[in-house]
Image (cartoon, rainbow, N blue to C red; front, side, top):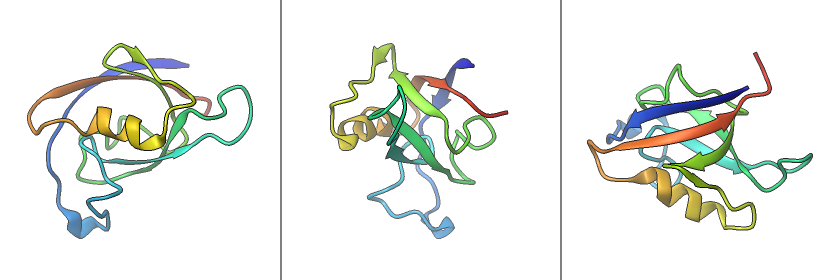
Length: 101
């Protein structure tokens, strides 16, 4: 399933266990897919309870584009992280692939 959604970026309470280095503007942590046809694409590792992605994205969702730009599989994960970090009170469009219910 392919899903396109918009998120408002905001700062969130780090008391929920995320550190500034691994949490991003919509409230997710990322990892890279390690196998299959999507190898190298960022995947949602964790959705934080205070983030705008909570109840919209899920662990295992694969990011395929951010703000209309396809994700480069060979790009460092940090590059993708920066594209979704953004400025507080701005919006970002994210397209994901979801292989689970």
